[in-house]
Image (cartoon, rainbow, N blue to C red):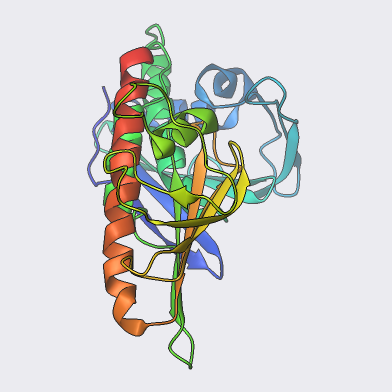
Length: 303
């Protein structure tokens, strides 16, 4: 087991860039840890992809596909000061290992910088799994069975503040726009079904209403949220809000996410500034309730 001297953190790293930082300590000398983070024969054991690299600034880095059907990626070594520092690009991301001797052991700081804000919890949870593999490899022990770290993912969403809106703006005329971008831990089809819910009378899965039809919540089918304006089954559902609802429009859209599962983007708009806070609060609760249910489903079927 590794020591975690500081909590994992998430922070801006420039325009449209963010970083996840992990700090760990291993009861092994720095030279041994350096070999584990810089030599391909060691990296292939615990790193999330096979890696071909020469520890030299400017050298090309080649990464094997992390999952079947995904492309191989390349990068460049940006920092190399054996046995203390190694950094390289990974497509558009950047990964940096900083090592320092601490007593008889080694402290490692891993800094991963990227442009996908909503994916930060997936990256943090994934590096946590890699940490367990690295610790086992350094100790000469069998690697633990890989998991999707679902519970850790959901924990990091809250810790990193990823449940907050990715966009929350008000125009000069008072109109507003709020965008939530939430990484889920189940496939899009499962989240789609959760959004529509089960018919309380029949117990059957509801289907999306057609354009022009009313949209109602599964738990309160007599309450009309709005009138459907756009529907692409499994991908998009949008509606104009009813007079009793805060805001003018709501749009659900599934976009490409991380390996954890679906990425749900919920866009809210309104013309009355007084509706902004109620709409934000209402949909924050709704999205997080859906995410919690998805996590429960995933935990019941996945390690």
